[in-house]
Image (tube, rainbow, N blue to C red; front, side, top):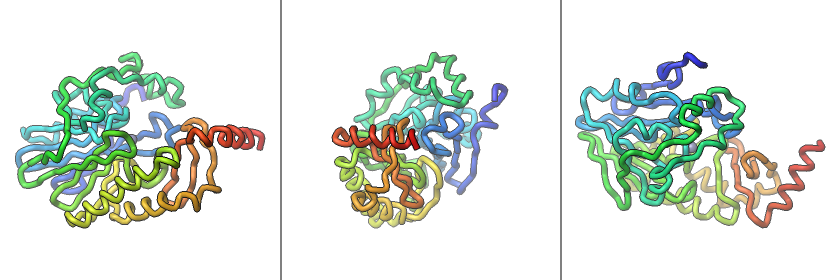
Length: 288
Ligand SMILES: [Zn+2]
């Protein structure tokens, strides 16, 4: 692990001529998030390239990306400001992010919560004292700018729910990049009373897919290139969350209820009114 280099750490897949996928093993950084992979995406146009997210920042990402640029200009965009998506921002001259999350990458990002991670690779963060420095130059997204890469246009929509400034990006070639709003496996959700915000955002994506003829979904975690059914399916589970509520199991590290509904493991943040119930169920689990 100590001698590991970027080429060993990142898994690079040429999915299409215009789409490179860079996978980072999130469970080797902190297995408590119950998530195997973070996916970064490089979209290659005739004139420019667009990198979606910069990963955890443990190993240099830029050398991996540069191999695909062939002298083209690179733009970088964050789907949102969580550490596993903005960790490598410091390697790039400037980064786009939605205006609602500018403040999080404008300042130091505290990573001390990773101190207790069971995995030793996080020791690499001790070089920077577990503090991610601010992003050098930030370009804020506030409306409906389109990235013209030459031969490919990439648009985006604001999709709050996972975080206040989450965005989803889409190409005119039928691909959608929904960030952390939808993916298979363990999916973090707001408290039950706030889930409707998430449902609204997913419904917005369903409409977008229908309007723009989008059929392939590339989430930022776990499986990618999945069908747009993932949107309808997750939306249906969330709309009917009461039906599954009695199957909830407390997850203390994530302060969330886990509900297993098959391909999705819903992780619903504990609401204020549920705190007592949560503590009781943690106790029962411990004594079992
Ligand atoms: Zn994430």
